Length: 170
Image (tube, rainbow, N blue to C red):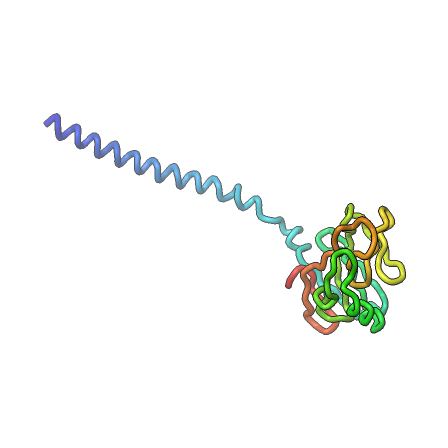
């Protein structure tokens, strides 16, 4: 009889170890769910994830600056002369065809942060100039002079109407 009690104790012990492991694992998952969900972006961050822009108020040759994810975004309504000049050039230090930087040739949309040290360039004549260190960008946002290593970034955007874009979706 002592031998059967020993086998019963062993089976009981194995069962209790398995049940305790399952309950402990479920407890760890239950504790981890709130922690992991706290890492999701808050509602105010999600609200800034996309920005809708009405282009109808920007005259030809005009620039409009909007904020997207806390960064300035330049929207340039290019003239036919600017479009022709930009399509004829591949840029300077980081060559890139104008056609790859725009969806519609008359509208340029770029993040307005200098790729050298993060300053905000000013629109001056053709292109933008960063006065901090002298970087210059053309009307396609391509770096043509100065210490900036890269072209101005093109954010993801799409046209939702002839005169409206959403920045942040592509």
